[in-house]
Amino acid sequence: MERHKLQYEVLNQHNPNAETGQTWEVEVHATPEELQTFAETGYLVREGLFQGESLQKLRDALEHLEEREWEKRDSAIAGKKGWGFIPRHLMDKDETFLELLKFQPTLSIARAMMGPLVRLRGLSARITYPGEDREQQTPWHQHMRVISNPIPPWFSRPHCIDCLIYLDDLNEDTGAVAVVPNSHNWLDKATPNSYEPMEGEVELRVKAGGGVLIHGNLWHRGLPTLNAKRRMLILSYTPTWLRKSPHGGAQPEDGLTHSFLEDADQEERMLLGVGGYS
Ligand SMILES: O=C(O)CCC(=O)C(=O)O
Ligand SMILES: [Fe+2]
Image (cartoon, rainbow, N blue to C red):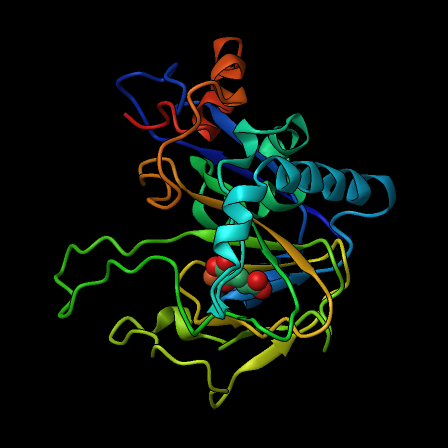
């Protein structure tokens, strides 16, 4: 995969030594042309983010989590129609997930698109199961539903990059993911609550270990899981000054990130949402 280098300075004359005031060198895991397309269309496909052992390690970690949280899973998938099982706070639950904190193939792109001061909004998973008696898919939706109408002059448009990382092949059995290119720029309308195909939608089928990076407000939906279990991770980034995901309740009190933060460096603290603005 081609790379290029970027350099940022965060302008802070009052306190040039502040954590934010340093010079940031970013080796971006994408070409400038790819980033331009990402900005315009709102999505970027990345095949082979994880392969071989590293893919297997993620699958194993998710399987262990699924076993530990089987009660939550069973109640999540009991309904006929639904999103499936969505375990959250993954970095607090397994070292394998915490190791994704500085995963450069996605973090470097987040920094290239949103600046150096970014944080994790969350790492969760979505697992869907086939079955005669269930229908697991998602309606059209977007992730940052906070846009006002009309838009005032100094409105802060929310930006977020959600990396949908697939641990199984996307195909007819598991279900593709569909996106509407450029819809992240439609600030005057919201997604319909519908499961129907839409004009202009693109269905994406990546291989296991691949990902689809989306702007958090891109219109998208997960197609039905018909014949085989489907596992996805969603690794999200926002600027440091945005709050983290409101979903999934409180962070586990004895979560891994708590002890990790005790010895974490400034960048790690920032990524976990401690500081990063002044
Ligand atoms: O599973 C997918 O492909 C997309 C899931 C999704 O949109 C979500 O969990 O927010
Ligand atoms: Fe989504």
